[in-house]
Image (cartoon, rainbow, N blue to C red):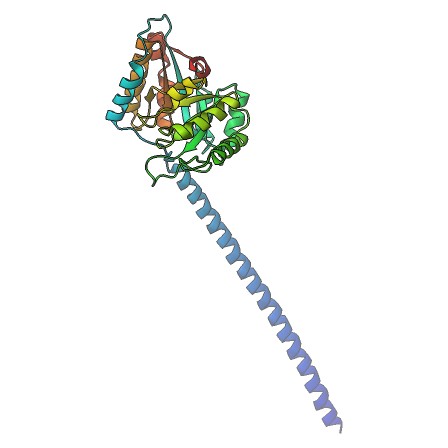
Length: 312
C-alpha cells in the first residue's frame, strides 16, 4: 500500500517537473523568436531607410524637364521679323531688359538662387504645383514681380499643358471660371503670361475672353509668343490691356554656350530698340548664366529693370 502511494506521488511530482521544464523551454524559445523577429524587423527598417535615402538622392539627381513649347530657329526669325519691324530703332543712354523665369513651382532651390541675383527677375508661377504657394510667398516677401503662368492648349495634342489649362473648345463661361480658379490659387499676382498655348493664342474668340478678364482683374498680360501667329499681344493692345511680348527665349537649348548666345541676342535687341524681354526656365545652367552676366551688362550699359517697367 505504501509502495503504491509512493509510486503515485512520484508520478505526480515527475509530471509537475516535466510541465515546469516545458514551460521554461517554451518561454525561452518564445523570447528567442521575438528577439529574432525584432532583429529582422529592425534590419528591414534599416534596409528600407537606406533604400529610401538612395531613392531620394536619385530623384534629386534627376534633372527636371520643364514642359514648354520649343521654337525652331525659323519660327524665331519669323517672330522677330514680324514684331520688331514695327518698333523704331531707339538710341537711349540706358537700354533696358526684363527677364521672366517661367514654370516655377516645381522646387524651391532655383527660386532661392534667383532671389540672390544682383538684379530683378520676374517669377512666372504655374498654379497647383507642389511648391507654387511657397515660391509665391518668397516672391511677395522680396517684392518680386509675379505672373500667373496660365496653362493653355498647344497645337501638339500629345502634350499636356497641366492642371488648370484653358482649351480652345471651352465655352466662355468655362474659360472665365478656369482663369479665375487659377488666379485664386495664386491670389495677388501682378500679371499673366501663357504656358504653352500655341493653339489658344491664335484663337481670337478665346483670347478676347481671357484678355477681358485679365483687364477686369487689373492685371497685365505678357504674350510668351509660343506661336509666331499669336494674336495675344496685338489683341491686348486693341482692347486696352497693359501688355508686352517676349523677344527671346534663353534656353530652348540648355547648353551654356547656347544660353550665352541668346543673352547676347537679348542685349543686341535692347541696344537697337531700347528694350527687350527674355523668358527663361528654372534650369541650373540658365541661372548660372544669369549669375555671370553682370559684368557684361555693365560694360554694355544695359539696365535690368522690373518687368512692369516694360509693360504698356
